[in-house]
Length: 349
Image (cartoon, rainbow, N blue to C red):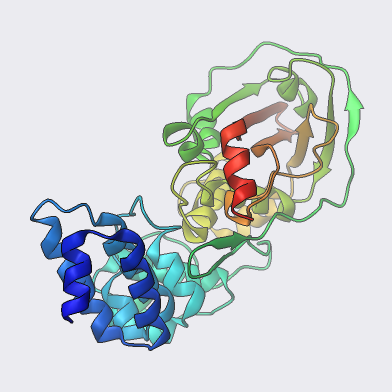
C-alpha cells in the first residue's frame, strides 16, 4: 500500500480519514488493520496520528465483523472517539458475535452489559462475567428503557429521557439546614462526574431533614418548579446523566450509566451492594422522586451533544425524599455550552 504509506509519512489527516472511509466501504478489514499498524509505527517516530489510529479502532468496532471488532476493545477510553468502544461494538453487534473475541473479563463484562441494556438476556453465559459489575445479565421489571447511543461513521446520536407523566408546578423556596451526609452527596455527584472533571460544568448536592422542596430550595436561587417522577423515570434520568460526558467530557456508556443509577438507588435505600434487586425495587417505590428547574423553558434534560442540538447544554436537577424517615436529597448539575460551542454545534448540523 505505497499510497497509504505516503499519506502516513506526510501525516495528512484529512487524506487518511478519506482512506479509512474507502477501506470501510470496500470492507477491507485487513487493509484497515494494516493502516492502523502503520499509524502506530509512525507514532513512535513522533508523527501525531493518534486521531487516525483511534478512528480506525472506532470504525472496526462499529462496522467490522465480531472477530475484528472484539480485537480493538480495551478498558481504557480514548480521547479521540465518540464513546467507549465497548458501547460502540455492542450497538452494532450481538453478544454472541463478540463474546469469543473479548480479551479480558472487564471488557467482556462491559460489552455484556451494553448488550443487556439493548434487550439481550445473557443468563447462564459465563463469558458475560456478571461478577465484575455485579449487575443482572438481563433487564429487570422495574428498570426503564435506557437512553441508548446510535453510533454513525463520524457522529453519534443519543436518545433523550422520556417526557415525565406529571408536569411541574411553581413553588416558593423554603431552604433549611443541610445535613452532613458525604456518602450520599458524593454518590449523587458521581452521576455527573465527567461534566465537572472533563468539561466546564458545575454541580452541587445536598441532604436535609425535610422534604424534596426544602432540599431543592437549598440549591435554587429563586422561585422554581417541581414535579413528580416515577421510579422508572428517575432511574432513566440518573442513567442518562451517568452515561453522558456533558459538553466536552468523554461519554461513559450505557453500561456504566445503568450501574451508577442502580448503585445510587441502593445507596439511597440503605442497601448494600449488590442488593437483592427485588428488595431494591420494592424499597425504591417507597421513595418520592422529583425533577425541578428554575428555567420555565426547561421541561426535560438537555439533549446530548452528539445530537447536534442548539440547546443550552446539559442539565440535571432532581430530588428524592423518604417520607417515612423524614429526609430528602437534591442535586443541581449543569454543563452549559458557550457561544463558541453553540456556533460549532450549528455549523455541524
